[in-house]
Amino acid sequence: MPIQAAANKLKSEMEQFGTPPQFPEEDPEVRAKMEAEMMAEAEAKAKKAAASGNKAKGGKTKLVQKTGTGIVRQWNILKRMVPVEEIPQFADPIHWLKYFPPIGIEHMKRFGSGVDWRRAFITTNVNGYYDAFIRWQFNVLREKGKVLFGKRNNVYSIVDGQVCADHDRSEGEGIGPQEYVLIKLKVLAPDHGQERHGKI
Image 1 (spheres, rainbow, N blue to C red):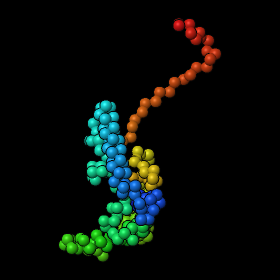
Image 2: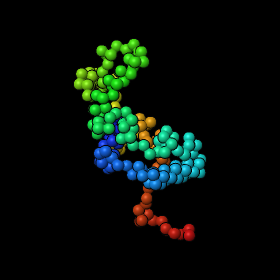
Image 3: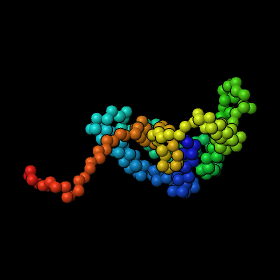
Image 4: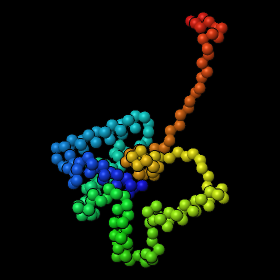
C-alpha cells in the first residue's frame, strides 16, 4: 500500500506540475503563504477538537510533525535517494520493487547481517509463483471451511481504491467508525379518526 500511494502521489505531481515539476512553493513568498495557511488550519482544527472535548494528541498533522512545514513532495523525497533522470520511472509501483530491494540487500550485507538471500522473494502478485501458492492456499482453506466471509469496518483509501492501514492516512489517524442511533417512527395516515389539534 505505501508503495502504491507513493507512486500515485508522484504521478499526480508530474501531471499537475510537469516533469521535472515546478512546484509553487519554490517561490519563497508563496511558500510562506502556504505554510501560514497550513498552520492556521492546524490551529483551527486543534481549537475545534479542544472545544468538543476531544482529547487530541496535538493540533499539528503528522506531516507537519515530521517535517516542520507540512509541504513535502514525493519528487523531492526521491531526489534525495535516486538520480533525478530516473525519478519519472517511479510513477510505476513495480519499478519500486525492482529498484530498492537490491540496495536494501547491499546495505544489510554491509551491516553484517547473516541472511541467506537465496530464499528472498517478493510477496505480491508480481511474483507469479508466490501468488499461485497463496491462491491455492486460500482456496484449500475455503473448501475446508476455515476462511469465512463477513463484514468488518475498515479504513478505505478512495485514491487507491483499496483497504489501507490506519497509519497510511495523511490525516485522521486513530479515528474509528462512528456509531449512530436511528429511530424509526410510524407516520399515521391523515384519516385516523382523531382530532389533530384538539389539545392546542
